[in-house]
Image (cartoon, rainbow, N blue to C red; front, side, top):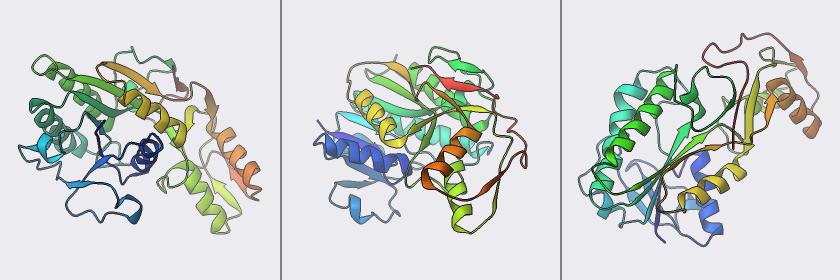
Length: 270
């Protein structure tokens, strides 16, 4: 089976490549022409394509894969930037449209829990998207547009709504890397919110195993949460990490306000 992956050089993408390798699949990596290919990925076939200005023959340039795992997306971690709607959304739709119009039959796209907006509690993938951020709105709109595109072209679409991930190589702005940086900096206290909000965290290795398994189920169209299904408070998440690592740092709870674009309690339904 031939599998193409966009965003392979990102946090999630690197683990997706590892999972495909574990399954004895050598992925075709779609990267920006200006990207310096890491040594760890250089043994794979790399196809330089600018998603913001995609050529007409995308499918053939990607060596006509059986499956596309589309992880690429710009503008993060600014969830409110207008670029998600004005730049990212149209570019990613054109990219996928070009591929499926030329013969690509199986597409898996990384969605986001931000599509659910302020809906709280256990969130089923069957819920109607009600995004309140530009990022969530752009992803939800892309999903709707691709669903509509299925009436024009014969392809299956698997939409993977990612909740919170954790693991080595995560972006520095995430809560656990921020905590680790504070410890390494010798800080005596760690400034955070009140920490009582409930979130859904999943180790990135487990997330990618689920995502890749979903992508390889060819011929199916579905929406699935990539999540643990188990809520945990941010305070407990941080305290667990401190205990596991044996760090000495005090929590300054309530230093930051709770985010206004997320409900206090939400987690995914498996």
